[in-house]
Each structure stands twice: as C-alpha cells, then as structure tokens.
Length: 160
Image 1 (cartoon, rainbow, N blue to C red):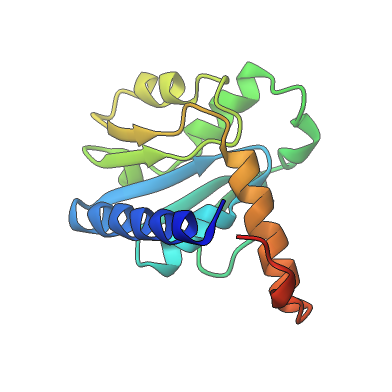
Image 2 (image 1 turned 135 degrees about the vertical axis):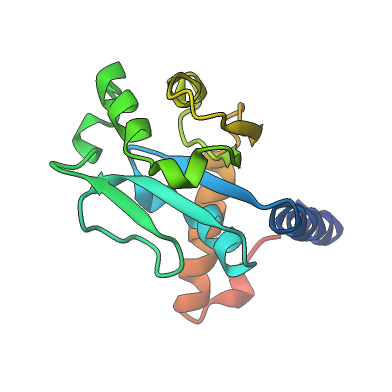
C-alpha cells in the first residue's frame, strides 16, 4: 500500500466511523479471540458505540471497548468453533444493545453464522453492515505491527 492509498483508507475509515455515530450504529464483535479487536478499538477512539463479546469473564482487552466475557472463556475453542459456543457468545450480547437497534457486526471468523444466531434472538435487530470477507486478519496484523513499532520507538520502519 502506498502513501496515497493509506491516506484514502484513513479517510474512508473516518467517514465510516462518522456515519456509524450519526446513525447510532453499534459495532459488535462476537468472537473467540477478543484480543484481535484492534479495529474495534480504533472505532471506539472515534466515538463509535462498540462492544466485544467473547474471551474470559472479567477480561478487558482494550481500555476503550466494553467487553463481556464468558465463564470459562472462549479462546480454547478457537480453531474448533463449536456451534453451541458461537450461539452462547451471541446470546451473551445484552438485549439493550441489540433490541430495535442498528448493529454492524465485525467478525474475525465470518463462517460461523454469527448473523443467523443474532437474527434468531428475534429482537428486531437491524444488521446494517458486516464483514463477510476475511480481510480482517491482514488489517488486524498490520495494525498490531504498527502499534508494536510505535511502542518500540521504531516508527521509521513502518511500511505504508
């Protein structure tokens, strides 16, 4: 990605976050691996209502993002992804976050029927956006690497 592409991507991210705020859209990340929520954290920093559901009860991976964990945790199911645990994660989303609300779903693994489980809760949730492609791994890892380089004082080694 060249410098101009990076600027355009940042502008698109800014517009998206502004639209989510204006339209009262909550971005929810149901997940087995909540530590992968760097993009959710970036949305929260822009003032978007966000929520991560997954991980260990009491765990908080990002200071700016509310997180609801599951008793016993979810990470050990990563790679296996049992349907009953996927459903349990979705069922843990508080009703007040999704009933009669606009929601964008940010998915780390998109083939687990997160949307179907959410629709089955029958709470008149309007899913206005979701990530259906697995580009997240690329952007998430790039975000993690950029943060590590900044923290280590090695920002000059970033490749846009």
